[in-house]
Image 1 (cartoon, rainbow, N blue to C red):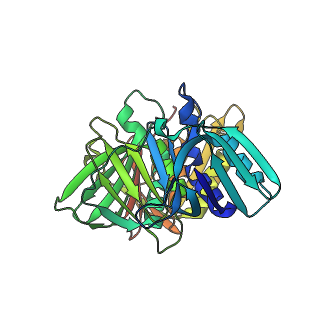
Image 2 (image 1 turned 30 degrees about the vertical axis):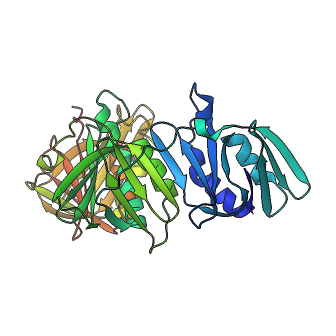
Image 3 (image 1 turned 180 degrees about the horizontal axis):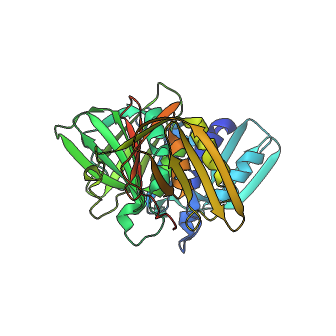
Length: 375
């Protein structure tokens, strides 16, 4: 393989695929990035691929001059640092029959050992199905606004991922960890004739996807499913992840429309009040924050071995007065994810769940279970 390309374009590709490279593996080739140069089919470009056997990513073709097509797998960390430190604007790469790779830019030259490109685990062969399409920015936001609620412990592996569910023109993204539920939905376009579809994608894969999705408002991303995988495609890359097996919680049956108290508050004031209470309640599980809901305010208190805190937030209250306690981190993470200026907290009793929703926007909702008040 003999190629040359612009350093800036090569670095953009390396930054896309770099974090998918496996750091903990007994297979040395999984610590590599595959460089594939092809000048067939009337195109001429370089593709970069990373694969950790759970997920894989392949860049779109990077513009390059290809003197001799071929492929080689190079240590991801070393090759990325070499390219980053090169002095020139253009990188020249040449491999020999033993996969020894020469990298030249300006007056700098490196010779590094590679591995045969044929040994690199290729992306699984995929037969494209009916696709679902939405704005890349929208999917990025949907992941950001829900992923903090996935389960960390793997006692129920299916909860370490997020449910992607299509129904009647809308995509819902749902995360559950046993103590809370995060839900976000958005309208999408679909080529599928099926009215419903659902699959669970690992949180690690969605987190990486969110990192690399473009943030511009016009870019789109399409995705489709096979029996065991989900494939996301946009102008810059193709991203493949395995799916999680198991039955996801029937979350829609848990969100109740029965409530006795509605608290309407300025999101930022409520958020900062809870953050102040956390200065005392550092161990959130053992030291819950108590909310005293009165006629026109919510009193936020915390009482721990470190001390006590008191705060009062002006709110609109509709319904009965109530005292209820929460792990404050759950409330804070939900409020941070909401873009609206005002939110509504819907409650029933001191032991019933709290549902956070927008005043008029029903595209998101969060359910948080309370903690038992100490006597």
